[in-house]
Length: 189
Length: 189
Image (cartoon, rainbow over all chains, first blue to last red):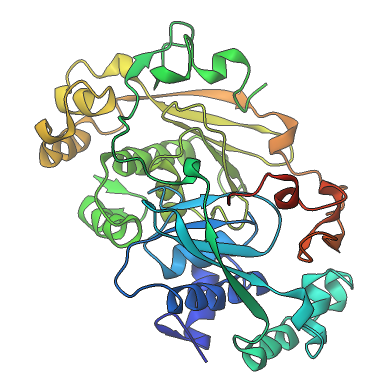
């Protein structure tokens, strides 16, 4: 079984190097990326939405040109284990999710995915073996159209930059008279 | 000038490979990561907050173990060009920002950062040369304490997983009786 341009084992190495550990979710995510790609017109550019913040975004960042910092990857946290590849101008795309209804024959994946057992009672090797065995058989897909807020409006101009009269730092002028942090929306006490 | 373990030129190669293009913001971000690290106790584990979604997160993902998918990198979008490295248990850390007040001698960086000129009238090479020349002299730092919502509470249990009675997919049970997507909070029409 290959994941993207890598063998299963090579992909595991890539995951350890980028993500810091082998999380089963990234292996599932890698397979989901391949399924999404196989269902898209070849050569088409796409953006990606991840519906989970956990692990899944790192599979996308490892296997596609889409990253958080280049904004081709966006997160819409519904907590479902799903991703969508879509055309950023039409909004049309394909959604792939790990389908709990297809896990009957895969007890280790099921226990991990639905948290049926504490983590320390689960065996990573067993889960990975089941992912290899299950291949693409435990995922489902359907067509989606994303909300306009996730699409690229090529006529829209990016906001001007201003210096916040309160903190003095540069910020996006269209966000208000002062920067969001000076209105209590920053991450600090 | 080095950025992380790389020479300036090696870092540019890494940026192209991961982010897809040389964005000046990632070069600034790489230098900001080095400044943050130099101001932290050696060997200490840290989480990172980026205050911008543009470019900056990719510098962090390239140069630290913190990624979006492993949740050690979080985004709190104030639109300011700043990042904070902090201890996830105490919340104490250091914030680094590109300081508009220090750009007097660096017209190309200033034009890029404050969007004083249209993109096509700016020269990437000139901006990068100024970043090399300016070194760490155009950034400022101060101590911060992050809000508890960004810290790790080691006593907190992660939510149970349930199957949404509406869509049938697995989701975090503590988010409601149905999953957020089935309550209109998903990214699709």
